[in-house]
Amino acid sequence: MYFMISNLRCMHNFYKYFPSSDKGCDWGLNVLSVGCSRVLPNEIYPNPSHPSHHNFTWEMGRVLQEYALVYIVNGTGILETETLKEEITDGTVFMIFPDERHRYKPDNQKGWDEYWISFNGDYIEKLIEEHLFSKTDPMFQLGFNEQMLQLFASVVHIAKDENKGYQAVISSATIHILGILHGFKQQQNHDKDSISDLTVKKAKILFRHKVLEITDPKAIADELEVGYSWFRKVFKENTGISPGQYFIQLKTQKAKELLVNQQYSIKEIAYILKFESPFYFSKLFKQKTLFTPLQFRKKFAKSDK
Image (cartoon, one colour):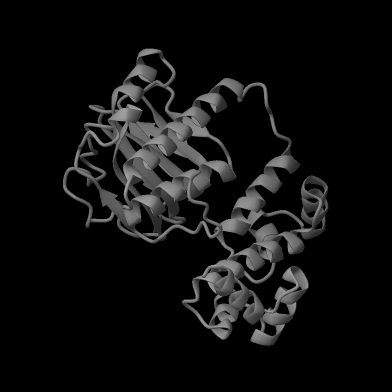
């Protein structure tokens, strides 16, 4: 099971490069680098701190010796390779192929949030031989896919810690991502989502992505440029609960994690989660869990002994 992350905001400008090894060979795939970043409007891209073998300028582009998957969670931009020039929209995954000059960047006015994984190995070469992925069709416009975001975020988190056996875990997670992308290509012409379904999918991922940033679910409707009354109606039809209740569930889950972690005081947690006051936080938490924050923290600590 992959590490589950409820707060999926990307860790700003985190990246890690690994030496090529045979630790992932049992899976047929070696992960060589992972990372994520939030690129602000008009910010230099890519970050100059990357190693020279992965950094590039827009004028010269770049040629990699491995494959890479880049997931744009939020934002827009452009991708150019030797075979195509495509606009990138939020919710897009694109594949970079070895020995192919390419360049990509976010829109200067918007920036973007990105995750990436680079890799090589017999497994991906076999998929290429079987024409399951192609240089001429490297774009996967998934929209907002919670499973995909979870996988990318998990790979970054696991790679960050480098616990024993991490290479096998991130290699298998990358294989899982490739499987999802292939399945998407097969089904994209047979599984059309309605406008309301897409709106709800995007809203759910935005709620998770911004659980520590917003205080009112109406902000999500504003970002999606839809009226709140319509948004609330289709969201409840799709999920069975209102946007406000969904958002409270996410905040409650995040509160549980912070309480278990014991790094922050209850007052600090109320502040981090942007509750009106520690009193309101405690009252709402008890309504949802039947425990006060302090009771929840003590109960977990006792059961963990």
